[in-house]
Picture 1 (cartoon, one colour):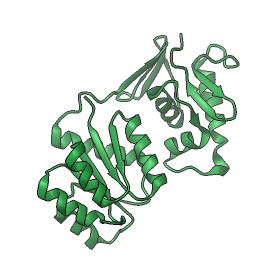
Picture 2 (picture 1 turned 45 degrees about the horizontal axis):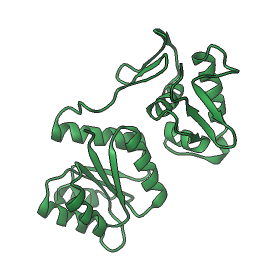
Picture 3 (picture 1 turned 90 degrees about the horizontal axis):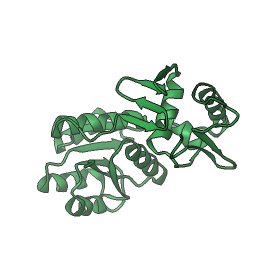
Picture 4 (picture 1 turned 60 degrees about the horizontal axis):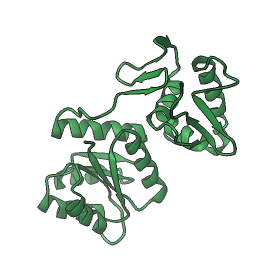
Length: 230
């Protein structure tokens, strides 16, 4: 059974990005847009960890955290643009387990979430570390990829890109989404670099890169990992 994460932030793009990264990491995710809804979700969804923005409408993260702490010992992680040391101390004194300032790397956030969950609940035995699609096997712990038992030499960006797609076979990713996943921040002027990464990956993964069976092009949209490549 996967852990459930509650994310409260009034920035829709950030909320969607964090949700996508956490889901790709194997977590169930509940999202809300303000502190009042976060408090309600803690009571009714019973999440295993809560990520709170500080500056939110209706009820800010400080107040939401104080009220949550009166009812629950659920781990809290503050995610905020406020960088003053006094604010960080205040958040930790309220009872937060971690404090991450914006801008941030979504991959670092996922790593912090995993670290907190391991510390609070023990080993995340249900957390996936290996993905298989046809003859491809990717192991996140050993950072290796094999095709039909033969190890492939991938760059860090190629490995990250492949892991994102193998974690959700059949799911179509736009170039901007893939760029955001491997760099932590996407810029429209650079989205075509994904095409270069895909071309290089196909040269290493595919028997015939011109007729790929693993990484499929969805014209006008982006790319996806074949769901049942054989």
